[in-house]
Structures are given as structure tokens and as C-alpha cells.
Amino acid sequence: DAGVTQSPTHLIKTRGQQVTLRCSPKSGHDTVSWYQQALGQGPQFIFQYYEEEERQRGNFPDRFSGHQFPNYSSELNVNALLLGDSALYLCASSRGGELFFGEGSRLTVL
Amino acid sequence: RKEVEQDPGPFNVPEGATVAFNCTYSNSASQSFFWYRQDCRKEPKLLMSVYSSGNEDGRFTAQLNRASQYISLLIRDSKLSDSATYLCVVNGNTGNQFYFGTGTSLTVIP
Image (cartoon, rainbow over all chains, first blue to last red):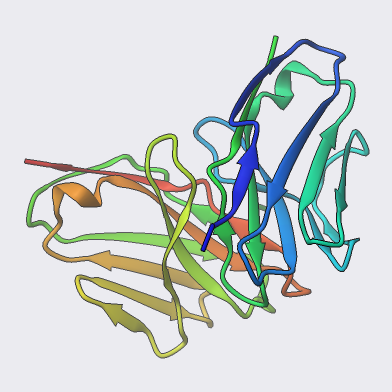
């Protein structure tokens, strides 16, 4: 049973570019949440998707957007990248309880 | 005020020591509480849920004090393998959004 998988694992972008990160949830999970974790900080909630809709959103600008597909997989898109967007982006899936995390996508913005 | 506050440490303790971590949360309506463990450059993983009555799992004991909005984690007989960052996690008003503390760093020294 595959856990949460994310891609890519590492990527480097330059300021102003756009990035798409992908997540496949754990089998049987219908809810996907995205988190941003800067170095030395705890994960910060970006948003959560359920039934292909954004159900909850944290304090992130509109440059951060997402999508959930019928198979429950999800994408996180970030436009107009800033240096401060450099972080580990974590996807977590759940089904009414515990969060299971993927290994994350480490984004570096130069 | 942050939703979840933790002492970031670091805590450096000898093998066999007992160490306690504390966490406070701001939302009195929170219903779910967890401790997650995060190893260096890895994703967070659930260590244990925290119940009102307190709960124990081997060397680990978690306690919740709703009146003081306070959560604790006690680790007895520390092992080298306990070295990690411990994240306090609390859910928000809707129950769908989980807030993470900044994490407390623990190093167990031989």
C-alpha cells in the first residue's frame, strides 16, 4: 500500500517563475492538505482539498492555488515566485483523522 | 498570537534521561491534539494522539490540560534514536485545519 507520494522531490526556480507540485494521497484517503515548511519552522497550512473543492485556506496569498482531481490526487501551483517561497512543501492526506505526510518537495527560488 | 506555541529548544539530554516538552494553544474550541515527530530533512510522522484523559505508549506519555490550553509530552529513558524534532499539532475551529508548532529539537547524547 503506497503512502503519500509527491513529485518532484527537489527543484530550483528563479524569481517570477511558476511551479507546480504534485501529490498522490494514501490509498483510501479523500482529503489532501498542503503545507509550507521553512527552515527551522513548523509546517504552515496553505489549503485543504476535499471533493475537488478548496475546503479551507490558510494565510497565503492568491499566488498559491491548487486543484484536486477525481482520483483525489492534487496539485499545488505557485505563481510569480519570490525568494521567500523557498521551502519544503508537504502534502498530507487524511480521511477524517490523522494526517499522513509525503516526503515533500524542496523548492529553492534563486 | 500564534495558534500553537512551543519552546524550540534545543534540548540536549544524556541517554536514559527523562525529558518533557510543553505546548500551548490559543483556540479553546480545538478538539484534536497530536504530537508528531520529524527527523532531519524528513516528513513529519504521527507519534501519538493526545486525549483528555492522558495517554501512554511505552516510554512516551502525552497529557492535555484543557483549562490551561496546554499539552505535554514526556519521554522516559531517552534513547539515541529519540533525537528528532517534536511538533505539537492542534486542530482549528472547523476541525479541518491543523496548526503546527515550530517544533522542539531533541538531541540524546551517548
